[in-house]
Amino acid sequence: MTIDEVLRQMPKTELHLHLEGAVDSLTFAELATKHGLELPPHSSASDLYEYDTLADFLKVYSLVSHAIRDRDDFQRVTYECLERCAHSGARYVELFFSPESHFEAGVEYGAMLDGVLQGMEDAETDLNLVSNLVPAINRELGGVRAVEFVQMVADDRRDRVIGVGLDFNEVGYPPEHFVEAFRLATQVGLCRTSHAGEVGPAANVRTGIELLGCQRVDHGYNIVDDPVLVEECVVSQIPFTVCPTTTTYTSSFRDLADPNHAIRQMASAGLKLTINSDDPPMFGIDLAMEYCTLYHIMGFTPEELREFALNGIDAAWVDDQTKSEWRAAWSDEIDKLLAQVT
Ligand code: ADE
Ligand code: ZN
Image 1 (spheres, rainbow, N blue to C red):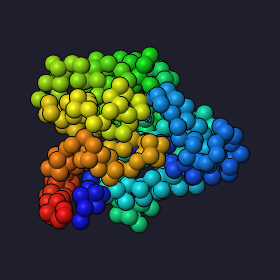
Image 2: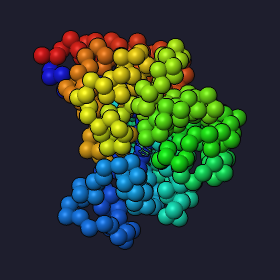
Image 3: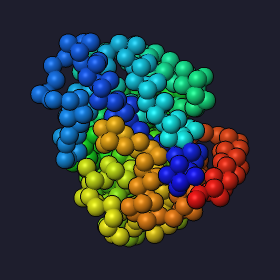
Image 4: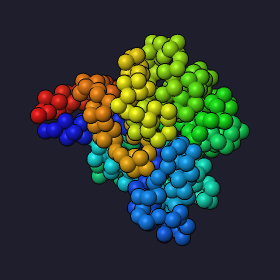
């Protein structure tokens, strides 16, 4: 088997994946037509997915979100997204979704949940892929709205809704605005993670951990500017969900082959990294391709990739018994796969 085939089959987690960023451009175009949504000029559907900064990307992300309107749409995009995860070797997925972007189109939270959770259940039945759901706070709407958002999540708590995230643009919306929202999330028993240090400073990573009580950091690249914080995170082994291709669109680390790329520096320092795809079709990738990128372009070894995959188990929001069962089974499976590389 080629290394690419092995990396695709290798069991893995996906812990940083946005439902709305996981909509294929053709599906987006179809849903837009279904709901009579006007799209920017384009000659093929894939032209719609062009951007060079986080802010521009987020405009398209919002447009995609507005095309997902009814229960069937939510079920469809969830199932299609999880199908692609399964095709990448994912065995467990924690899926972010952005309710605020759908409120803009007049959809109710309960209806979104009904469709997404049905898609997740179908994927578990058909593909044997387990997933959980993480509604994400849109930081650009501010701290007061974030508290209402967490209360809303707590008030319609379904089994698979396990935590909250914090996303959209860090610039102008630092984590300290969300202390109260995250305090409420902790009180009601939701797990917590936050996008930090992607386009904002290393200080956002510290605030996310210390003031928001985050159990993971999403992205975190600019932590490399603060060696003291790096050392603290090496000691605590708090997981970072890094997304290689995203860095080439949104961060200041655009060259994956650069030996000083943040992900390389973070790994060399001994931080606990998990590999994720963020918004796969919107960045032209899938999860398995991210592992291949780490191998072919960034120069990580198969052993390092094995460790990243297993780190995903430590970082997952599942019970300890499940973690140890997965660790035993997946280690074995990965070792057998790696022995078959030709
Ligand atoms: N939402 C989807 N992808 C994102 C990213 N890379 N950063 C912030 N918010 C996002
Ligand atoms: Zn993200």
